[in-house]
Length: 221
Image (cartoon, rainbow, N blue to C red; front, side):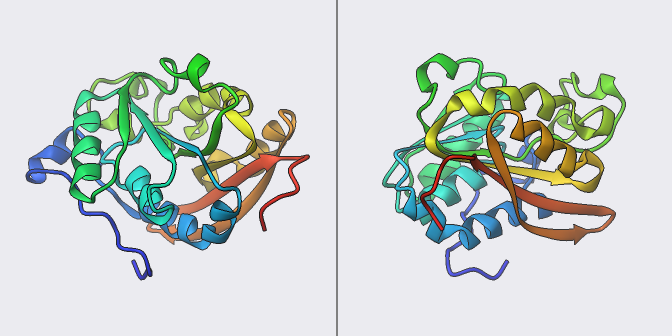
């Protein structure tokens, strides 16, 4: 990945760590690239609190902390204890301060962070799979999205508007099969406007990073 910001070093001890934690791939790197591309917008909203849902290795929340010069408070969540451990190690290895929380989506933080999140990241399990794989306790749960690859995403989308601050921005990674236009229509019903920051083909997947902001927000770029 060509970037003026360094890609974070991972806090993994060896390759076996990725038997139980999602290893950064093209979807992860697309999100990093789009966060860098959106750097001017991100700094313009002067974030005070940032949150990543499903942090995995911690590469994305650590990168966000880097490009914002660690000036905000950074939270992240994962349902996988090993992902929480690796995220903590990744942040420390790169000199960043991140607070990982073990929970499903934002269940443990919703009341505490309601209306306070300035930057929200979600690279969800988006692959189209049988529904039973979504609830798996294995590594496949990190990519299995069920019907349309949307089952996990659709559980979280109704929570977004209540988490975001008035100036907040939500970044979401999707593939074509997830029907981004339908997601845009759904989020418009919550008062959020969709912008596609960029897309990339990776093998059979056509990946995109979407950004959502409030319809009445006039700041930023």
